[in-house]
Image 1 (cartoon, rainbow, N blue to C red):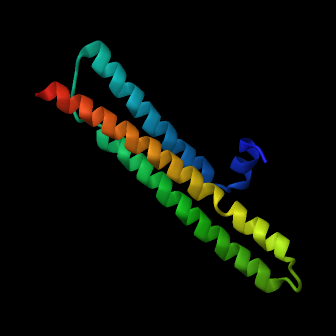
Image 2: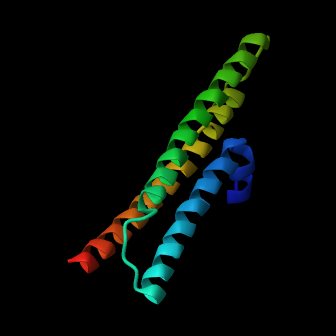
Length: 123
């Protein structure tokens, strides 16, 4: 299974998680450009990078919970479900949390690096 299939199978929360990733990257690039061109070193918007990552991870967990609840409803209503189908659904339920935590890890790195640069120039 390739990355685009995982994204499609991950559910509707994958778009929101990706939006949070774009916000984190966008603010990081904005701050780097601001530091490089205008020589402005401030903490404005740094928390937005961290918040985007946290929202991405929380949305991934929420997506998994919603997906598992829906799957359990379907299993309850079905007469006979093969274990392979249940296992495939369980594996798919982890796509959104994995993507959310990847976004969180990168946003933590971005936040830390930007914060240290700003702190270093403030001294």
